[in-house]
Amino acid sequence: MHPLTRGLTAVLMFALPALPAMAARFELQGGVSYMDSYSAPAAFGQVIFDEHQFGSSNFSWAPEITAGWIGGRDLKRFDNGRYTTRDDIGLVGAGIRVHYGPANAWYRRLFVSEQPTVHTGRTLALSSAYEFMTTVGYQGDHWMVGVRHISNAGMHEPNRGETLAIVGIAF
Image (cartoon, rainbow, N blue to C red; front, side, top):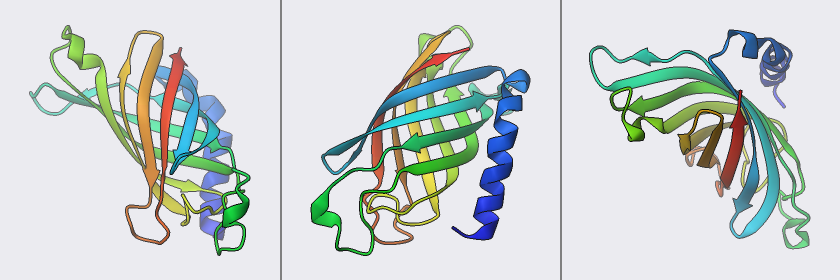
């Protein structure tokens, strides 16, 4: 891993325990990640800060930081390539969560999240040090459910990406 990436990851990992005290919401998430049709377990901690309105529109945004892990896969058929499927991935990302609608609308709880992400390891699914993490989900008062995709947007091959089904509890 590049020294700058390693340094940024270390700083964010040490800062992460202090962030829930400053946050509006802290989520612990777990789920299943898929590369092609091969599954692996995944776990994330996510800190979401206070929401802000985009001007006078019905759109709002909240800064968020995520740290997570995706398990490796023991797929022997990929062992002879440049990238295998065996590495566990540790990742850290920061970005925004966007909501739309008036405060009392049921659909206000729907969200889209985008986070540039750095990670450890290299696999067929995540082959560069940087990725983009996109999540579409629904959040309740103390829970969330979503679909997440992590990929480098074709900037480095191979670019299979990881697609996850996640659920979480919120504090």
